[in-house]
Amino acid sequence: MDFTAILIAAAIVGAVGIIIGLFLGVSGEKFKVEVDPREEQILGVLPGNNCGGCGYPGCSGLAAAIVKGEAPVNQCPVGGAPVAAKVGEIMGVAAEEGERQVAFVKCSGDCEKAKNKYSYEGITDCNAMRYLPGGGPKSCSYGCCGFGSCVKACPFDAIHIVNGIAKVDKEACKACGKCVAACPRHLIEFVPYSAEYLVRCSSRDKGKAVMDVCAAGCIGCGLCQKNCPADAVHVENNIAKIDQSKCQRCGACAAKCPKKVILGALPAAEEKEAG
Image (cartoon, rainbow, N blue to C red; front, side, top):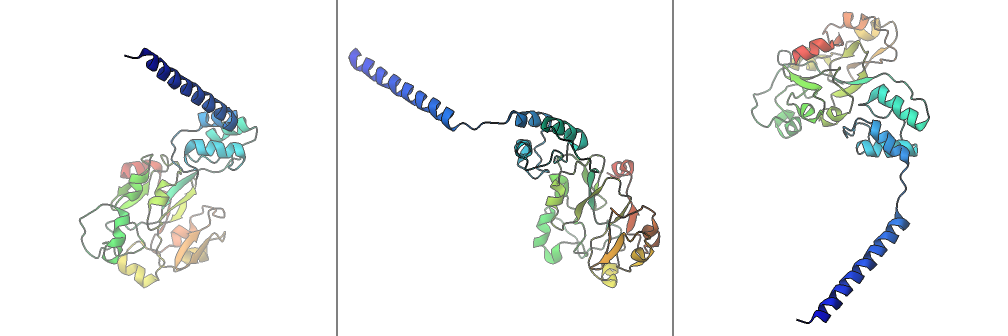
């Protein structure tokens, strides 16, 4: 065995290793990206759910955006005001207080009220309904499919299918937006936590067409609009819409609605019991 050859090979390997190590060390110093220490501090106070509800790729993405001034300190919907206050303290700014938002499903066509065109047994996924005749078994093409794509998307167990339609537990909802994105019929929107009167329908069809498919649909009669003292309710595209910033919570719209589509917000305790 030629020990000289072995020693030479070992020396060459060692030299190459040293050269590569030096190159990596120099490159690391030259090309390293300086991280603002505030970014790590903010990441430490964010919830860590990485839900994407803030519009950024996880909590680290939001932390970086806040430090760069690309996102406000209250951008995290899950953390809410307490987290916003901590982030604002790190950034040296006051966190603007905004009312908590929660998801709301604009449909009340449950199994008793909404009609079906046919019986369906198959994949329990709302997005699959677009491939079925008529967009699924439910006669109303605007209503909740009731197959729970929103339920599967929610990371906080805040939405459930109750009697054929999705209902939100507003106490558990963190307004992350996962359910909003998951609903193929765009039935879910954010409303103020304190909202008392909401329109539980999304149909844009005219009155007779609505009544033919659902006993709980808005017929666009306009009585809510005519009787609102605050000009907060308007009928647009055959559906009533309430401007929550103007709503005085008097209940006049709900009292005059002949189809009882405008209802007071369901108490959280009742929502949990229903689920």
